[in-house]
Amino acid sequence: MHTVIIIPARYASTRYPGKPLAMLSLPDGSQKSLIELTWDAALQVSGIEAVYVATDDDQIRNAAEAFGANIIMTSNTCENGTERCAEAVSNMGIQADIVVNLQGDAPLTPPWFIEALVKEMQRDFQVQMATPVLRCDPRTYAHFIDDHKNGRVGGTTATFDKNNNALYFS
Image 1 (cartoon, rainbow, N blue to C red):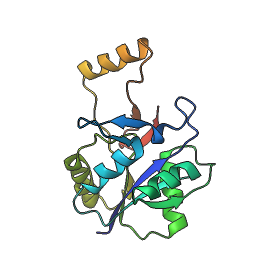
Image 2: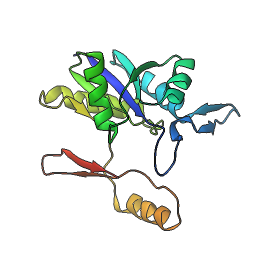
Image 3: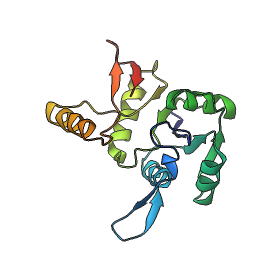
Image 4: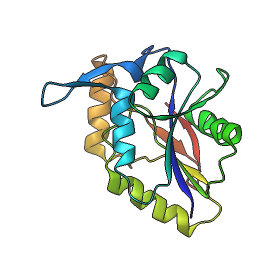
C-alpha cells in the first residue's frame, strides 16, 4: 500500500505564533527547529514512501526546504491539520492508500507508534487518513491538568465519537 506522512505546519497559531520554527536545543548542544525535528522523526518510520510538510507560510516553506523537506503549499483557510493534509493530498494529486497526519509539533512520536498505526489502517480499508494519538491514563491526565493550571501547554487532547473518528483536537 502506498503510504505517506504529511506534516501540517502553520505559522499563524493563536497560542504560539511561529511554533514550527521554534529552535530547540539537543543534548549535544546543537539546535534544530521543531518542524525539522518532526521531519527527522517521520523519516525514521519504515514502510513510508514519502514525507511532506504542508504549509501556507513562506517562512516555514523556506526553513523546511533548507533541511531538504518536500513541501506542499496549502491555503491559509485550513482550520486544522486534518484540513491542511486533505488539501495537500488534493493539491498534489497524491495517490496514497494511507495518509498519516503527523502534527508538526510531535517530534517525540516514536517510529514504532506510527508503524503500528499504519498496520491498523491497512486492516480497515475505510480509514484513509489518521493522526497518531495516545489514550490518556488518569496519571497523565492529572499532569495535563496541572500543566494547564500553571500556564504550561500540557498537550493536545482529542475527542472521538463511538466509532473512534476524531471530532476535534484542542
